[in-house]
Image (cartoon, rainbow, N blue to C red; front, side, top):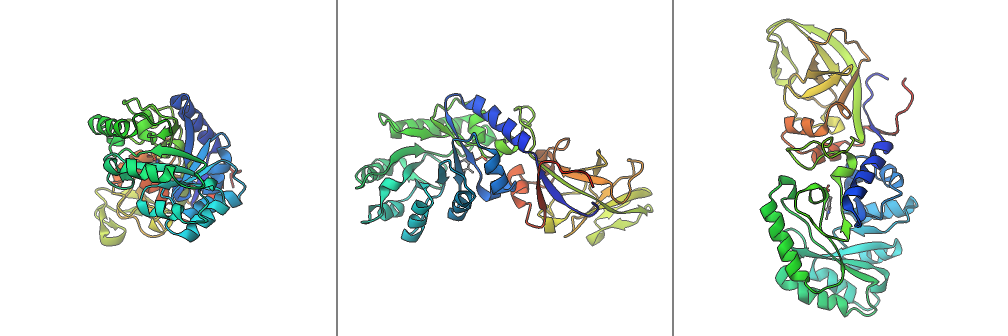
Length: 364
Ligand SMILES: *Cc1c(COP(=O)(O)O)cnc(C)c1O
């Protein structure tokens, strides 16, 4: 269908990536991170395809509730916890587990009727990210308060988050690990450290749970190593089609601001995909687009509903010729570099105007 942008979600690739992660994780259990609408892939479609996941991680209470309402039965962890008594109650009602990263959250659990026995509590230790978690110096006191909850929490577990694993700054990762070990020495609780980069990085991280996000979706967390190198397959194909083709004489300009000037007589294909769909306007001239399966460079600025591609080298391109923004054959990581960002941001930005299609439907 012409002029129709869609994100096709390949659940086989998702399951393949999950098994690669499972193998890499060894004996550790896998918490599949599906926050932000499963990094743009559709929360429900993703979670229901990941039957083998041992748990799901989400950032917001509403995401957890949606998963429960859709019939997901695995444990679901609120990675930022809850912030008032009402949220705590709703979390309990929907059997959501909680990260506890601040004394305010302990206070909520200490209130009479808080019902801590309804939760697995994941205590977050800040080992150097300086974002969420109890500083190492305050962790022992926090743990002591949580141990004294009456009724007791169903289970206590420990986690921390790595700041530089994706930059392969192993010195920082090792330092965080050392702080974590120091803070948790002698404790017998289950622990979780690794995100995707931690899981595929060089520093061995022994833990009971891993928390992969981006790797599940078939994108690499590293700048210097592709998803393919890690054995992962892209889950999302963002595709649209050509809605106009024009010949542009040398010296003519294309698009807003006349930002692209034809250095020779050129053929320009207009593709129905723009920042109104969530594509970044920072995608620069020269960024690759697959038009009819062949690479061609973006020409000029991305507009709200469309973008222009210089297809002068491609031979026949017509209205209706498919255009792939990323997916198999064009890694989202590569596109992200042309937008000065990371694949996470491009994937999460795909918005509600883009139809999400699970599996590959009949052509037409
Ligand atoms: C988002 C998130 C993850 C997943 O990170 P990836 O880099 O996508 O693997 C893991 N843990 C926490 C606490 C997160 O917020």
